[in-house]
Image (cartoon, rainbow over all chains, first blue to last red; front, side):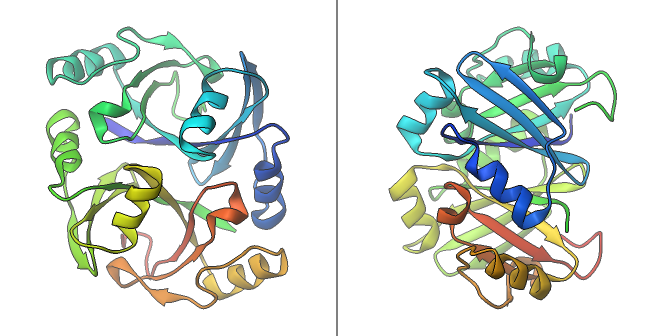
Length: 135
Length: 135
């Protein structure tokens, strides 16, 4: 049902110091950069997955998460084949969904989040990409 | 330098309720289970990476982490080819290493952790496995 780990996301305050550090220390590259309300999302390829850097640039979900839990790991995203079917299955199993229907997220993919309450504090994202190589 | 994301780890209190939930909802399987001082580590394959479940069974690093940051995502582990060389490079770049030399971790692999202070709150593990298919 879960094809792979699509990305692992971390949150940091404005300045993207952690992104620069990952570039310097490990030679990682920013493959894409996308502005969203209150944050900038950057995708850094590692093998066939991505690290996703969420830089809080204004008030919003990323800054609120940093205020509550501190900066650091934010969520894990799994790639699925058929997102509506997986969401149905999750709902049947009593998972509390933040997005009951797929919505369009970074990279133009269909995404949905489950509430961290349902997975012991782990914020889970599901991603349905249009092709294997799309981020 | 980073071959891939080897695993993403989360911490939960004793009982492994989140592992059971991941099994029920997503059909994930526990490939291996290993006891360490104060916690049990379980590897759940997802694509060619793993989710690592850290169940606090007694006082120790996992329970302390839950007390400080709450349960949820704990660290991200990158696979590298030559761990001593990567640790040297990290030290030269001023990364604060928890393990200055590789030590043997779960699955018998050589591992080392960097301090989350060095990566904006993200606890980073490096793993040198003996073969591509080893966990």
